[in-house]
Image (cartoon, rainbow, N blue to C red; front, side, top):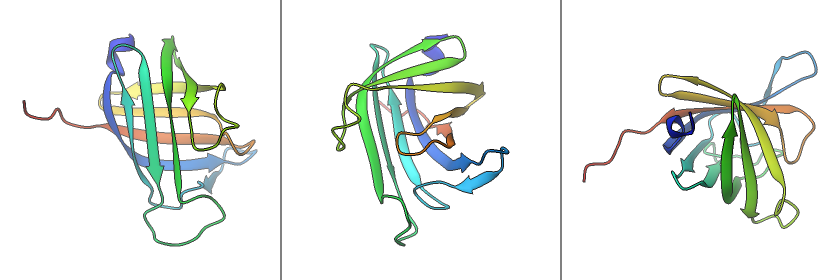
Length: 128
């Protein structure tokens, strides 16, 4: 169900997979942070940042916004806005696994051929 994804999610881990399925460090280091927003009317916003203060081979910050839709165990993000103009107009497809309040998204990266694995934790609802 699409409603299962609606809400705000906090990034818990972000890593790449090598050709044998082994874990590689992701572009934002070992302990990135971020937020993923899915709205009921089909908008998505993703912001993620490096928190280790170091300069890795990857960027310090990744973000984009656009629209989303779900089809079975896949979610599609159509990018309408991004700091990198090459991303605008692209559609990112992610396999999804939902386990209670944990959402795992796996798919090809925007900057690498390696599959990426992002684990998100649903944030508690804010008081009214």
